[in-house]
Every structure is written in C-alpha cells, then in structure tokens.
Image (cartoon, rainbow, N blue to C red; front, top):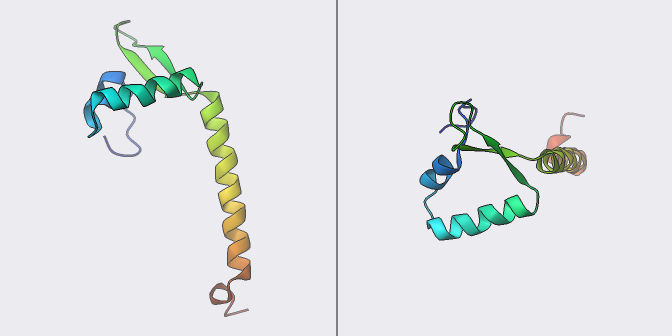
Length: 87
C-alpha cells in the first residue's frame, strides 16, 4: 500500500504487511488501542472485518507536533547563515 492510497487498513492487512513477528506486532497494536491512539470500525459489508483508524487523540497529537516541528524549523532557518545569504 502506497502513501496516499484510499484503501482502508484492516487489522489483517496491517499484520500481513509488516515484516515483524505477529506476536510483537500484536503486542504493540493492542497497546496503541488500550492507550487510545487507535480505534476500530466495523467493515461496511462484513462486520467481522475490523478497520483500523487513528483516534482523535492521535490526530490532535500529530497536528500539534507538526506545528512544533514547523515552528522549530523556521526558527532554525532564521538562525542559519546559509539560508540568509541573499538578505
């Protein structure tokens, strides 16, 4: 699955695509679920299928961190002479 694909990510697909042991992946996956970083949705046509989606907690955290990285990067560029050579 390429970045930007619109396909849904099922638990089965997630576990099948990762090059790690199923036991290790399951441990970390369950931890992310229990800590509220990921959520499940039922499949549209088949309720046995579990679709993985980010929780609002994960989305908010990524947005906050993205803003911080952007701010830090801009500050670093302002202080770096190679970015200010023409000014």
